[in-house]
Amino acid sequence: MDASAFLLAVLQIVMIDILLGGDNAVVIALACRRLPEAQRAKGIFWGVVGAISVRIVLIYFALQLLALPYLKLLGAVLLLWIGIKLLTSDEEDDHEGLASSDNLWGAVKTVIVADVVMSLDNVIAVAGAAHGNLTLVVLGILVSVPIIVWGSRFVLKLMDRFPVVITLGGALLGWIAGEMAVSDKAVTGYFGAGMPGWVKYACGVTGAILVVVVGKWLASRKVVTTEIVEVPLDASPASPQDK
Image 1 (cartoon, rainbow, N blue to C red):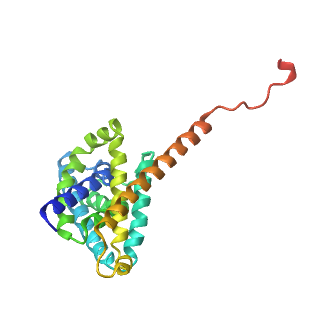
Image 2 (image 1 turned 90 degrees about the horizontal axis):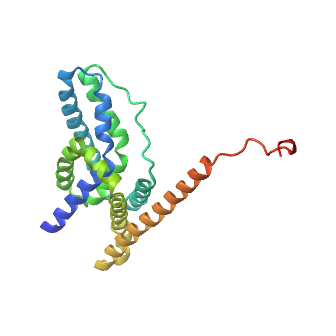
Image 3 (image 1 turned 90 degrees about the vertical axis):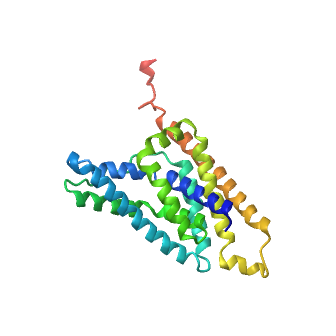
């Protein structure tokens, strides 16, 4: 992999981590909220370290599994769904049931467990963008962690102000899904000597367009449905005596 391709892959992983890892700051804050002031910084630090370590291990195994035939095709389908979900998300608070702890290691454990449970989409997306290179995974996550933890508020405000950022993120996931699907061993075997370069890009473009079109369509349907539900209905029709 040349330097430009390496840098592009790192940037893709950083963007994926920002888009799909924005909940991390919320999880850390909720898990550490009952700690004494003197221990909160330690809880945040060790929680982040533990979550990063576990995520890298998960992605390592994902990279090994994606080397098997047909699993990249399955991963591509999941990634398309993740991209569409990103565009149709209503951003409701999903962390109300998250338990906090009044001791340091209890809070750290909560952060790690919650991150593992929430990180399936992130693991699949990063594994697809890394193209089997664990160095890319580690570098991308290390670059994105401070952005997620300390810059999540800014990133969320940026997404609220410029919705196109979310659309571009969904398109990126679709692009990676397309490239992942066409790089599956079960697919490359059909091309014998070698796959034409344009096939990979065509599949990436198709995946990006599919996510944006389907995601926007589902989002528009959700808005229409919500408006219909919110229209007040008369309890009963007016009686003749009321006229």
